[in-house]
Each structure stands twice: as C-alpha cells, then as structure tokens.
Amino acid sequence: MFFDLTEEQRLVRDTARDFATREVAPKAAELDKTGRWPSEIVSKMAELGFMGMAVPEAHGGAGLDSVSYALVMEEVSAACASCGVIMSVNNSLFCDPVLKFGSDAQKKEILAPCASGQKLGCFGLTEPMSGSDAQTMMTQAEKVDGGWVINGSKNWITNGPHADFIIVFAVTDRS
Image 1 (cartoon, one colour):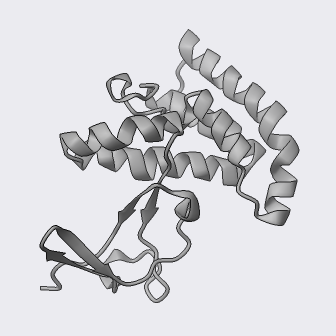
Image 2: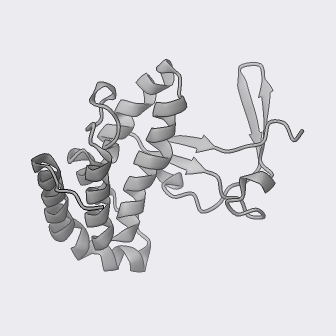
C-alpha cells in the first residue's frame, strides 16, 4: 500500500532522524559493547515525546498516529536497536495495555509519568523454563487481602532493572 505522509508525519520523521543521527548513532557501538543503560538518550527521547507517542494527549502523551509511531521507531532503531526497543516497550508493551485495560485510577497514576519519561514501564512475560509461551508459564498470582502475591521468576525483561511499573503475566487458576 502506498500513501503520502502528512506534513506532521514528515516533521515527526525528520525530528526523529535528526535526533537518531546526532544523539543516538554516535553512542550505539559503545552501548552495545558495554551494555550500559542509555539514561541520557532515554531522557532526550522523553523530551521529544517519544516515550508516550501513542498515549492520548488527555493522558499526558503525544497522541500521535500509528504511522508517526512507526516512523520514529524506524529512525531510532536504525541508529541503535536497543534504544528503539526501550522506547517500544514503554509505548507498546506497557502504556498501550494500561490505556486499553487499566482502570481510570491506574491511567491517571501511570500514563502521564511514563509518557513524560518521569517513570518507565516494562512487560514481564518471559520465563526461564517456558520462554514467552504464556500457556506454559509457571509464575502464579494469588489474591490476598490488600492485593496479590506473585510467586515465580521472569527473565529478559527489557527495561526491567530501570522500570517503575511492571505488567507481570501470571497464572491465577490452572483450571
């Protein structure tokens, strides 16, 4: 399918390309080699609105369309795949489920801080023995007075060590 980009989409793409070229690409090899968390890049992505692209403006995000989101992802990921994934996880795997399934109180508490980069979200699915096969996951959650108790382990959780909020997948009833 072919379509023309809108003026806003071109501006978003060009902004992302300039940022990726000047700020991200020069540090990509060092980040890959050392595994260092790119806090300065994450902060700049937040300043540009890239950490909450699909979050509606009413919830503190940029309110961009899917094409603009894809354009930013292309530009940043081309410069440094790790930085693109950090941004993608916060946007798609964390903010999007909160937006779609969270309570009004959760949306109010979580979305604006994550979209602004004050806070960071992640997504905990992968397990040591089952990978990302949710059907065979072993982590369990049990409802108790005042909340839930979660028992199990997760691994390879992008943003995990730096996240303020985590969506954790767990089994509540095997039947």
